[in-house]
Length: 176
Image (cartoon, rainbow, N blue to C red; front, side, top):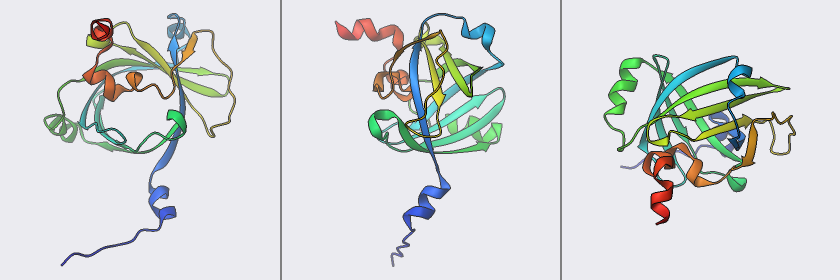
């Protein structure tokens, strides 16, 4: 016997938060001197299908499980659920991950009324530096620090789940 439960949409989306962010390439390393803190992160993907991802992340000895829904409005927003898990749970879940790990240092840079998270990628993505700013609405304005370059919001090649499969250091090779 199959039991179907209907969950009203307002309750379903209440359990998750809508993440609204814009993403930019970084022009120089001036973000480092403006940074309030930084952390080393390693993340793997249990599922990285187009439209949904399930990610395991290790950050400074702490574990996190994150589920993201499909990108909306040209990549500007998507639903996200994140939960801290034990280090042992995270290490166990890493054994279920698809091949490839994203390794990076995240720099937290307060600027104006916003916090910019600058990801300096390591390993096979060495040389790529991307900044994100989370917003309260899609139309919210923000002060742009001088280190921000070209906007790449919604460009899939810059998604961490894509960098795992198509690392930055191989982009030139893949064109040929």
